[in-house]
Image 1 (cartoon, rainbow, N blue to C red):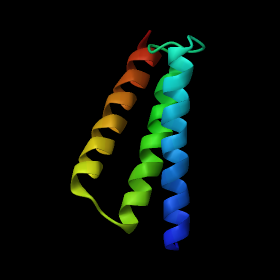
Image 2: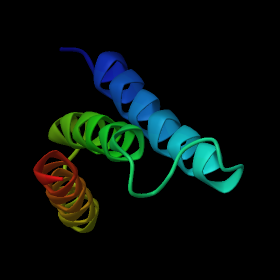
Image 3: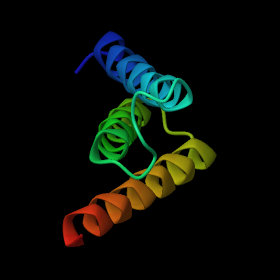
Image 4: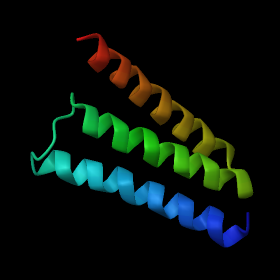
Length: 80
């Protein structure tokens, strides 16, 4: 993949996370809902993919944690 593709994937990931947060703030989705968790998983994974091109250890740690927490939320929702 070219640098531009990695960058585009990362930007789309950021967009998804920001959309999720905005929808949460305007009360269109709930923080305990599947949509919020999925937006965050997809967004953080795309950011991680973009970090493969230009690694940044603090950002990688942050996105791994973001992904893990969001996966935990999905598991919790599915168990209900």
